Image: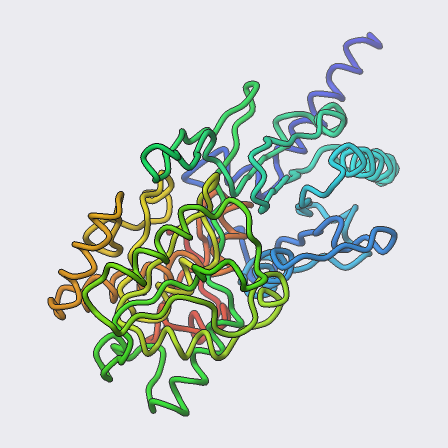
Length: 417
């Protein structure tokens, strides 16, 4: 009888844990978002960002995690009082180094939380999302935490999901490698970077006071852009920015300087670069992109994805990029919303073609900007991490060309999209 009672209690506790609004939504696609997800209904604890004992911060924590939670219509940053005992609390933890210490501290925190929830008669399991926005190709996991809350309540997401991408010295170009979304029977969701809200704010200000335009105007065609093509990477190696995994970028800059038919070229850095430049928007950089017809972006030699891509798409310039295995996940399509090149020859020929075909260039640039604004804002990404999809529907007249998530509509609008 005791064994039967214990089994029944365990089963009931597991069922109660699966009744968490996020777990229900992820399990059943027909789950009614409108009825369950009221505005600011899901508290999210960002760890270790909210841990006073472990002082950490990063550009990704600022631009994606905290901003995304604040901008979302359904998520809110959990105050201390509800980080453990709220029925729908969600934990999101950013992998920190050393990973072993990060996992140890997180597991201890989960064990302490379980004891508190047990005393309160609450389920001992809740969804925990492990995210890694770094360039690292390592697939991190926290096995100790998996044992405490169960693998079914652990969700892993990762920015860098391409392995064996390298610069081939023989071909003098990159070998693309392979996209990997599973390791040791653990699934990893791909989480790209975002259009930063502070960059959108800067863009809006420049458009208003320099061009008397708005974010929703067709900025691709409203004025003559004086720079034909730009690549925001120096070719001389003396800029002081991160000089590693950069052979492809160096190659592209040299080709643009020496082999393109136009003289209206910019190769180099505007504004403050590197880590300092990622902390706050660089006005000179945004202004320069608004004056450029084509912006070329290139990946690092061993990984894909960076903020420059989204900033270029936002500017209304045609964006040209080296090939990416993650392109489909970004919602972008070669020839429709972006132009991909796969060699020095294709870079040159495609640049020369689109510089003299204005209408095609403008149409592709406009589509790219639409995708960036409609699918890659900070709140989009945070909702994708937690719910597996974007749940805040943009219905305002200006959509998707808005600065903040609360501008999505005159009243909160929640819908699975």
